[in-house]
Length: 96
Image (tube, rainbow, N blue to C red; front, side, top):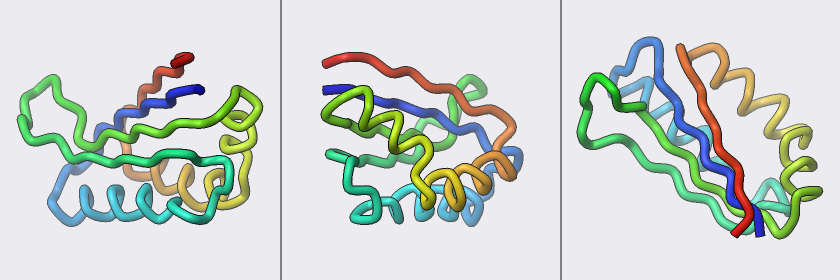
């Protein structure tokens, strides 16, 4: 199993902006068949080093993670919004 973790720092971390990002990430549930687990969390510490939103997903295999990356919903709707509203996006992927 592959874990895929992404942290998002918004350009303008307003409550509405954070909710928009959270809701868009959660909207992937049920739309991507290779997605085995989806969690989205909003940072509660709000320190200078904090990122605003965290995404935690799991996939059965590396090919499934790669298919997720190019899936039309992810690549066409989710990624463009994240690139538009975020000042920084970091990710880590690892085998479980």
